[in-house]
Length: 331
Image (cartoon, rainbow, N blue to C red):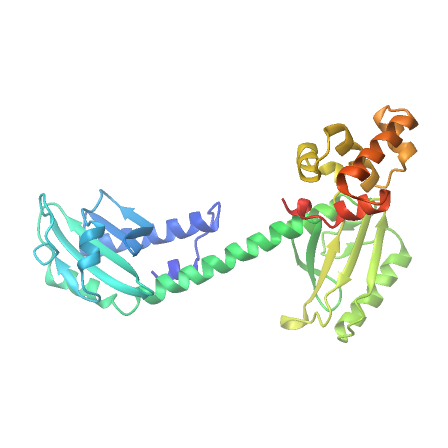
């Protein structure tokens, strides 16, 4: 149960999968300890089942029954609120979680009744089950929030690196790994050090590292590469546990990486106009964009005027600004 609350499953595809595996493991362990053939753990609120874990065959504990149960009392099949149908040997417990929410934990046997000690084991969980479930949920929500934040950073072409005070990499995000791999002459060595494109950049990195160690809040941006563009900045006052320092990498995604249909729909443009906008946002001049698209200069000028009108933009720079500051990058 405490392993589930702490989210200590390994090898799960997601936090949701990890939670399911841990609570199912708890039910299997509890069933083995009490000789139960099946076990159920359910979270309910206002008659709605919010979470459900089941070990073995389905335990016939209805939502109407659990709603009528009193909290912190162990029920047998004879004590449970009346329900039509056969009554297998059972033990059940209800724990309040707050705000009308509660957990129902039930065990079932097919061949013989439970012993008194089995009911006692269930009763002993009374003070701990709500703590474990609420702790698990807080941890799950925090992890889901962190995953959303990382997803947003990834869409913006941003990643993070944690350095030792000497500049050795402790850890880095997936996006940071991809940005490093995509930048010529920048690599992470097997000993954990970054190898920069040239000595000037390496020296500038050391200067920024020292400034971060001293807590200077100058937000000095280090340009690591121009093609593709890649910049690094240490978090102001970045010293953390054990003196570790956090830096952020940014390598903006090209507008051409965005789905064409998404740009067209979001900006109210045709697909051909959206292609032109992509190229302009990626640094093409109008003439170069026309060449790239196989258009004449006059076709490109006419298309740009239509784009300005549809977007309510005063010119090319206004179009670029509107796209680069748009939430379309987060979609």
